[in-house]
Image (cartoon, rainbow, N blue to C red; front, side, top):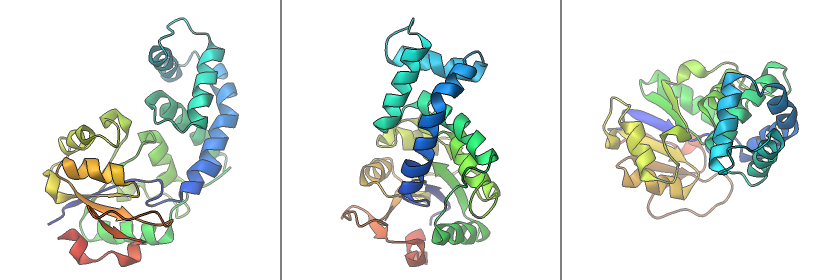
Length: 228
């Protein structure tokens, strides 16, 4: 029996367009000013140094770092220092009321129901843990962070690599086949399945199904059989 749910965010419990049309453009617009103004702050220094290491330019100036980050945003790179900085920038947007964290209504109802039924809920997203918590703190339904037991990001590894899911399981009080991973990306589900997790594909926008995974179109179709 399934004892815990591990859920992706983008395309699974929130619209892809929210991230691509709201969060990414906001971060791109704010990033140059934010990084320049905060380049002496410890957490920002750590991300700047990480960018320099990744591009193999230890003496890169701040403009080079900023241009690299903007290129990564434009090409939707899942790179940890970028995700950490985006989370910091988005915090300002949420706090200023520039936007709220979108959740599908069926996803919110599903998460509530599962948590009330005793399931442990976890999140694994390419967005930083900070960014994840901001979506839930400032969600369309208020602060729903109490629904979740813990959060994981790319510090666990890339989402399309099985080792990431092994790393997550090592931090949970469950064995792999007691955890159901929810995602809209088949390659992520393949990696999770190879690590021993149960999987469920969300097909919200007409993408192809996969014979390797059960699928639903929204959480109204979720049944007890998916927890078996």
